[in-house]
Image (spheres, rainbow, N blue to C red):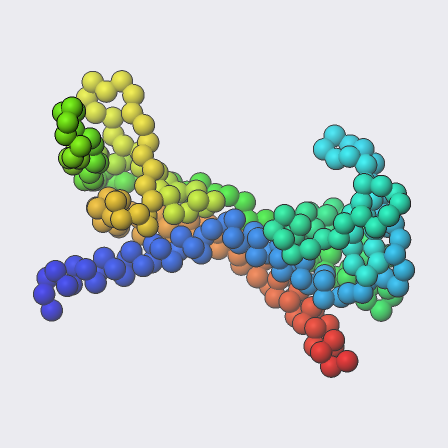
Length: 262
């Protein structure tokens, strides 16, 4: 096997790891998946009550206006005491509101659920309140020793009638890199300030953008370490939540099977 082929394969394995891990550490996606599972778990218990009625009254507060949480076939919220209001659904906005509502008012709702499902509803509330949110993390890594990276930028010629572009080579000495798990495809480079440079700015690169692939190659090993560090930090939350979500899914599956058999 030639040297070039070996180099390409070595880079590919590490680059694939970075791309794969950038998906796995996306806290926005992890949070949405968890909220959707919570919604579907409670939804599997439908119908929740034999009659529609108001269950929780929420008065005016600093961060909320007066509204009611009602229960019947499922759970609804409304701003007027009369009427049916709006039902929670599977949209990301609604699932997020449902998740937060259960964590705050789920215990008050439990007593309004039909007796045969009350225990399981209460257990789902307990599990939901025990879940840890996937909050955004900012993970940093010092590049020691700093690495010189090479890139390019296309700029228009200053000649009046020349519409061609030329490539300007940019060399930067990178000292620190960091990634936000809310935008895990973007890595920010903190560069060493040049002599006589009054101020310098961090540079953001997209790991999937072809224009940045040269910089990614230069920093491949630090990138692997950075994404590995982010993955380990998120593993603590994942390991805490996985047994809870597994129990929720198991409980909900029993109701889904029961409905299929009737």
